Amino acid sequence: MNETRRTPAPGTQSQRTQSRRTRRQHGLTLVELLVTLALAVVVITVAAQLFAGSSRLVESDTGRVMALQNGQTALDLLVNDARQAGENMTVTGPNLEVSGIEFGSLAPGRGYLTIRRNIPAEVQVQRLPVCGRPANRAEIQVAGPERGKGKDPTPACAASDVNAERWDGYFAEQSGAAQRGLLYCEECSAASSREIHSVVVESVEPPTEETVKGRKYKQVAVRLRAAADARFTPKDTTMLMLIDERRYFLDAQGTLRLALAGQTDAEAQAVAYDIQAFTVTATLVDPAQTVSSMSLTGPWTRIEQLELTLKAGSGGQGRQNVRTFTARVFPRNVESSRGN
Image 1 (cartoon, rainbow, N blue to C red):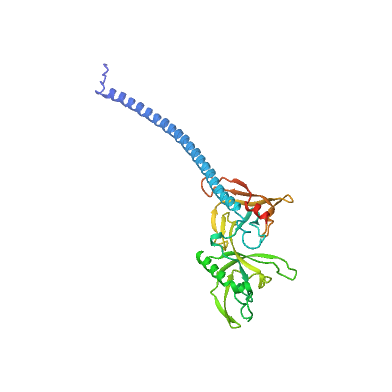
Image 2: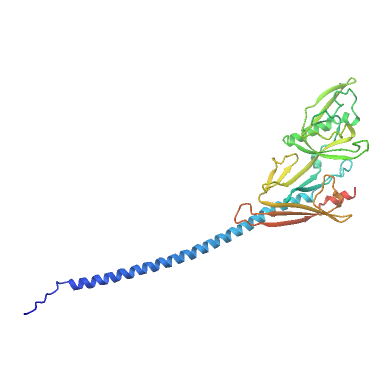
């Protein structure tokens, strides 16, 4: 029996071959795709790490630069003011022996520094006598006879109304802002003790008139932020003067602030943010000593050197970077005060 061989349909074998080739081609393409994806993942990972490292470096550099600017700028302001402390304090009238520098600590690491100078000569206002003390009021009469007493004024009080007008003009030039003053007396008690207090003068009150023994006198009073000590009684040796004062302090939120003249803490201007510590110390002579505080009365003339230290962060810019800045300064007016 003869076998009958079937002849494959034309094109069948070639179609199978082509199909196998196509499958092989598809398999190679898939492998290549997987390899490409793997390489892409590696490249992206490396690039991401490089970018992250670069970003960290930029943030770190930014933090260092901002900490430098933040701390150094604030320290430069402090140093400049400290050098000028005590300027012109002994030129007019008796030497008050008031310290041009006052410093201390509000809390650990939260220091304050007060700089005092006399008001510049071109706008200087004269010291005023204490002519009267209205009972239970934050007010001091500085010109004319004591109200309600019916007595002639002292020579100083009889002539002080002109100087009181200059005070009024000075307050107007300062837009009515409160000013710092010094209230002092040479004989504040039976023991003839000397006293000097820092006060805030809010305003010069409008003048009034009173006739004593047929003569009219102008009476002028100044209003204080708080009542002064009762020991400052009306005497020719009891005086009130205005002073130029700049007070730096570190608040509880880490902001270094500057209060000018009679500004309150709330009114003080921000100087630098993210200050983590502010300290002031002084090296004294005769005898040698280092102190971390100084009062209104010094010892100003014993200062040899001030050391100002700020521990500053980056102020929220870049990565946090804390740096410590220290400056040593000699207030130039200490030397002239020693000769008085």
